[in-house]
Length: 129
Image (tube, rainbow, N blue to C red):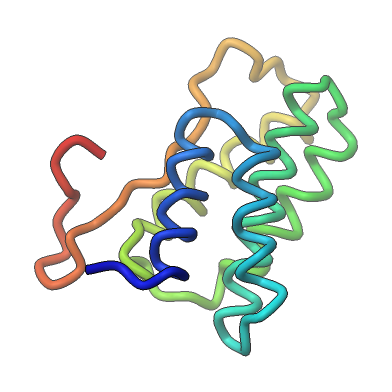
């Protein structure tokens, strides 16, 4: 059974994966406000990545670029599978997007990253996520 925080975290992941970046940001921010380190930094990284894609959707390349860079930096020190998600996959995708945005490339038609949820004990992706 999920705790309230786990449920809110999962809701943020669902919003992100539905490309509802503002909503993901809002849900994760609720957790961030009460979190302690290292969780606070991890959540801030996710919030910044979500906000970056919100800016990208609004065609604000400068905001997307700065928030992606900040989010990637915050997530850099975390294990590849932290908090039951594939953090390394998210970092890799975010870095690829950042490189394209910095190069002035058109990433508009490219699929946006998803947060892959792992089955924590075995490290495998959950079915249907």
